[in-house]
Every structure is written in C-alpha cells, then in structure tokens.
Image (cartoon, rainbow, N blue to C red; front, side, top):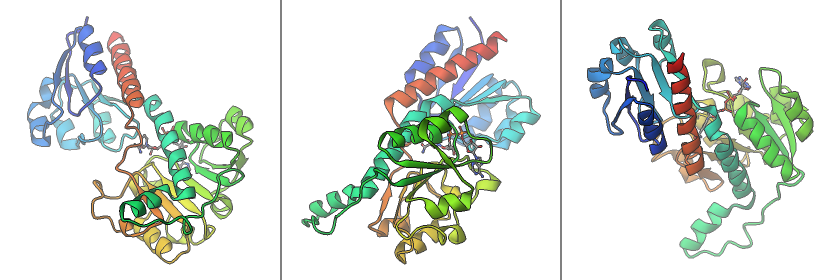
Length: 307
Ligand code: NAD
C-alpha cells in the first residue's frame, strides 16, 4: 500500500474513501471544510480531492508544498487554478466518464419537457389551472438538434436523440469523431449555420475565454423564433441577459438551463418566464454518475502513485 495522505474537501461517493483506504492511503474526509481551513492545512496533504463546492485557488496551491495530485470528481476543471498547479508540478485530474450519460439523459428530458411544457402544466395544476388547450406541444421526431461541442457529452446526446429520429447538426472547433458522425448521420456545420437551422440547440463546450458568451444577443438574433436553447455546460457560455430579453420578446421559443452565471440561481429573473425550465446544476447528480466518477478518480490516483 501507499502512505500518502488525502484531503477530500467535498461530499463524494463513499466508494472513493474505501478504495483509497484499502490501498493504504490516509484519508481525511471533510465535506464541510472552509477555504480558510484548506489554506491552513493543505501543506499536510499529498492529494487533494474536490467535487463542485470547493474551489482550489492559487492562494491554496501556493501553500500546497507536499501536494502531488489535485483531483476533481467530475468533468469541468474551472474550479481548480490549473496554471498555479502547473507551476508547482501538481497533476490535475478529472473524471470525464462519470457525467457523460447522466448529462445527456438530462438534456433529453429537458428537450421533451420543453416540447410538451410538462413543467408548466404541473405548475398550473398546483395553482388550480387546467391548461389543456394552451399546452399544445410539438414532437421531437424529425426536428433538428444542433449540438455545439461534440465531446463526451455532446456525442452521447447525439446518439440518444438519434434514437428519437431527430436530425443531428454538429459544430466543434476540433475534427468530429468519424464513427459517431456516420452512426447518427451527422450534418457538420459552422456555428452560424447550426444556429439558423436548429429547432433545439444544446451546448456542450468547456467554459473558456473563447466560449464565454458564445451565445450572445447577436447570435440569438439569428436563431429560429421557435428555437429552444438547452445549456447544461457552464453558465457563462450563454449571455443570460440576452436570453431573458429574447425569450421575453418572443424572438426565441424557450430555454432549459442547468447552469447559471451565478449559482445558486435563486432569484434569477429567468424564473419569471413560463417558457423556461430551470434545474439546480443536477447534470451529474445521479447515483450512477457519482459512483462511476469516484471509481475513476480512485483508479487514476492509484495508477499515478504506482508510477
Ligand atoms: P469534452 O471535453 O469531452 O467536450 C467538449 C467539446 O467542446 C470538445 O470536443 C471541444 O473541442 C469542444 N469545444 C471547445 N471549445 C469550443 C468552441 N468554442 N466551439 C465549439 N466546440 C468547442 O467535455 P464534456 O465532458 O462533453 O463536457 C462538456 C461540458 O459539460 C463542460 O463544460 C463541463 O463542464 C460540462 N458539464 C456539466 C455538468 C453538469 O452538471 N451540468 C456535468 C458534467 C460536465
């Protein structure tokens, strides 16, 4: 076994603890730890593990003199200062496999819910209203789904949506997987063509300087009036003010958001609108995704320690 010490800063699936301890590592499980406490004791640890609650800052990394690995039990690495880690020779790892199916299934559910307005119907019944007439929906079959970012999640979504006989349009900044393209009959397009042609637009890019407000007012103005945007990537990728205006003015058909510019998104003005579905960043919140991510991270850590 190994004798490294591990600090787990967020709530993670217990399987992670177990695998690491079975391999001899000393694990401190502190899912409520504060940033101040991390700064105080990070130098005692060789491995630091986070999920979504904790952000690993440069200030923390500056003190992390014994740290070899920072692990995120999830996909996006925007809550770890990767530049700072690099200068200290700390490996930063994540678990892309975990969220793939969970997020893709959430998107599918959100699209179906947008098409039939199930959330609105539910709200209305609870308020004593029977909106049968108003809630004439549409079907996904035959509609055009534009997927921006054909990485792990984007491709999984493409395959699921194809099974519902949607037409899949794809845009990425890197060449798109050929096998996937064939399988779903992908129509490759530039971003503008995708935006103009799609009934549903789902975003699966990382949050980078180049993807900040990738969908802004100008881009939204080129979409179909009935188009619906689904964002489960990161809040900053869609300009929320522009989205609010477009939805309110009826120049866009609807939106479903799992991620927000500011989280928790309590009091977000998009909640005023009926053609919007909001979920509290639950993309990877499934038993299966959490346990898969925990297993993947445990395996990766042990591989690295073995050298
Ligand atoms: P991935 O790295 O497998 O794929 C991302 C793809 O986006 C890549 O193919 C990349 O080339 C492409 N891309 C980058 N910049 C682009 C641009 N400007 N235009 C078009 N494409 C671009 O990542 P993934 O695992 O599929 O995750 C995608 C996103 O989902 C990430 O932002 C991640 O943080 C987010 N995510 C959210 C949740 C959630 O809980 N809602 C869970 C997991 C992941």
